[in-house]
Length: 410
Image (tube, rainbow, N blue to C red):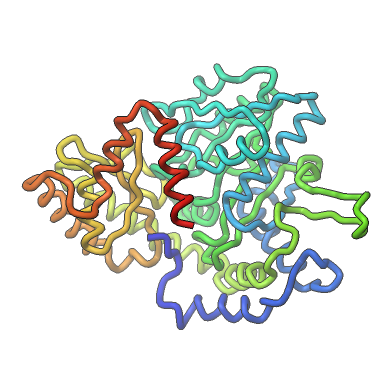
């Protein structure tokens, strides 16, 4: 379940962001001179987000800047595009390559296809973190970018950002940190005393960061922020057109027109919650995450993948088919993400789960027992699909199946 806001849709925080979105539904920040209030909202959302991620610390360099986007994928796309063009200007690289751990988000694959960048996807280490030594072995004269996540989407584990920063600095290349999930949790978890390793612009070598406001920032869907170490890098994000008969044109993001209502909603979410609100929310979801981990550890047929740093807990099994467990949980109304390498499923904990985690653990225990006593796929379940996909050596065939599936459903 990826419903991050607590409560229901007709009260509390929902009503605040819904009202803000409604008030500014007609606005478009493409027209800077007309919708000045929305332009200011965006600048303040970016500034507040940057402050969470080290912009006010001495080590950041004092030039952190950025823009709002439609989501984590667009933020990552823009960071990759900007890194590509920046490195072309700086080092003359015309056949760009980037290196990512296999736990990094699929948005990087999309960026590689869109922007004609060769992608190296490197296996993670035994702790399911980015393998810095393996990444180093893939760096060459065409490398423009390496990537780390804090945390990674599959297993909720933070990559060694400091080590990646040292690597990027030593080779003079860019380092993007994906904080789409962690950006509005890790700064507050650190303040609450959790042992959070360095992850933001205070780390030497970090050149860009993506962070979603529409996840744990509790803003309306369609709001993210991309941040850069300085303006020299960000300038490569923009598209300026001088020879169009429609006049001079410049746009900061992939979209031209953008929904000002969503920007206003994000601003309202951050202003209404404030630091105390985010601290309180983080305390709740970090505590429920630990309760979930402890509960899963108490089910002997299951094991947790690595050591989760935040609010995503992935688990697998050497005793039962974990995808059959997932199907059984689906029949009980739970919707979990199926993962591969290794076969596992994960739970992304939000405020919605705080009062029901014990119910989840009871259903999980029952589901494991059911699958153990009666192994085999259930009618309408996806376990056979995931099981077969994991065993097929021809990944091109799987890719074709995915494309055909999408073509038939949209």
